[in-house]
Image (cartoon, rainbow, N blue to C red; front, side):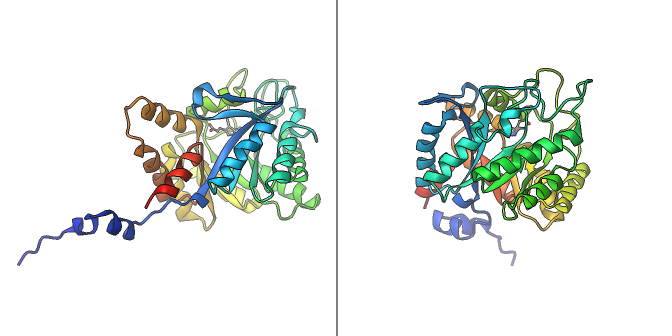
Length: 325
Ligand code: PBG
């Protein structure tokens, strides 16, 4: 007798569906990115990223309290300085915006795991991610010295982890050596290993005021057409001492996440970037998509192989996960 096979049996109700569920999102997977500005009493909504704000440190602390109450364990900080110059000096200043923010958070919320983005584009007057040559090319090896200085200054301020997002060659090794020399052997590096030159960073550049004043980032960020190159980049970062490797953006690069997952025995992070956020947020807010699209897209990133998801939806997802079941 030809019995009908009935996969629907395991979909009959919510209980059995949750029992056979293969991929589960947990609040532990989430990292929430935050933007910090100089000043006081500032909580400015970012136009291109509704529901996200630029915070002055006093307001940032209120936000961290909410985040902690939602059981989110980790934040990724981006600083927007008042003053920019050719060498991004505010990025490594002891009293730079990030250094002050990290100290303030760790003082009041010592358990909050603070990751800092290591890059120069928010701090340079030209908006590129490093030091420029006369011809306007980002000088790789000179930039490494600065990136290391920035990383050590963040560790000194109390950062739990640093995340270089610049895509210079050799930066993970350089930063690792500098952190170790300064005594921060236990500060891990989450490397933006496969970071693509993507149009999906658009809203972030508005938020962080970090768009390049000329040209683009294609001479350091990766070509969206390449996967083998992503594997090579990840391999190099692991050799140089990365503790976590990242693929960025996430949704348009799920294949890259899966490939990295299959090739390497490493924790993998994926950055669900500003454009991915705004795209879905706008569609949900305007009634074009049901809001379950948010959790569906986060699950797709986890299913692709990422253990860590950096997302502007972290607060939303934490709330959802709390009320589910
Ligand atoms: C800094 C940096 C960028 C993002 C994270 N770190 C912007 C860029 O490379 O232009 C983008 C994050 C996002 O879009 O959410 N280099």
